[in-house]
Image (cartoon, rainbow, N blue to C red):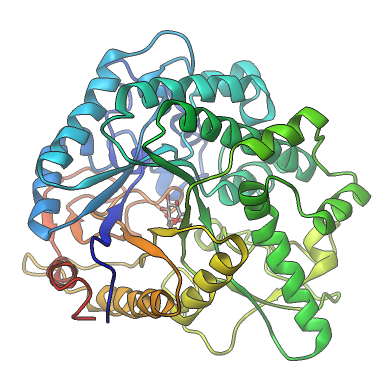
Length: 476
Ligand code: BG6
């Protein structure tokens, strides 16, 4: 398999999922620090207070990244570590921490890819202003970004604005399974609009302050297939792709909302309030590239009255299938009904495994938006077993191998993909699934109940990825 020269072979993480040190060196609380205190919201009431303690282990982890030969590391900055109150006074120790991480990565020739927002809004902005439902949060976000652009603009080339806006707004404001624990479609579409404005304004500022850098959002993309060739099912799939994907990507890349979906939301009285000024803002902040997080897509048929997947059991909540209940008055229930795909196997958590869907996704996104792409997440959550000091995660190797082959094919098809960040480098906290849903190349000795030794142990997949990087994909 042929990959471009200087391809960014990477891995990714997020602050809340790895750092721990939740109240150390002046860090303020985030909405996840508070949400995880609500009994029953997360598996075994797990939280990120200690996580895998990257805050104190970053040097050791970066040495392992260097040993692996990693070319890029995507991490997120915790906003409330920089601004404990979300705005106002800067916490110098927070900035110092990320500076040390960036310097350490660069010392080992690893390109830092910095995510500005991976879901951990400062709690104060939530309680005082209403979080992403308030335009005040746009200004606070842009000021937070300005601090990071000024500080790291000369060191960091690649920046991600928002991680999976589609997922965090839906899970947080529609399905009440993430903070702020709201279940209200109107509020979700309004919060989503506020995030769109924050995204555009941050990008606009970035282009002024860091003209030599590149910036874009990371979107959770999944292609939706029709169950059959019946035209009604095909139409349902077209609608589902528009509802799940283009609704967001059009705003990022074209600066406007998809008319067909906007009309539907208006009919249902759940459309966001978009002013003339807002429309101008959305036109001004277009990304330089798109980050794609790919786990899987979905399959749909024309809606009928049967029950569809609702994702009530938090173990099985699937952020990429935002299907509603056919009996309820959701926009999806008028457009499509999610069904199982008879051709695909599933992970331990019921996520479909669909490598070819990855090639389709990359082709579709590129053909529509003509921007360079970087894979900012792809990986397998599995129950790993530590036996005799080793973890034989051949299933993860198979999964990543199959997905990377499809990325290689998409590149041969002409899609400009410039990097691949596996999710994730070490094991980490899966937001609501605890510590048993492991994704890393490096096993962390901890579980849902205790941080144990936090020892880092290389899995079999570590050596496999090392070899892939060494041969620039030649061994796939
Ligand atoms: C993405 C997120 O949705 O998927 C990550 O950006 C997350 O933060 C990953 O961990 C896997 O999801 P989960 O629910 O298995 O942790």
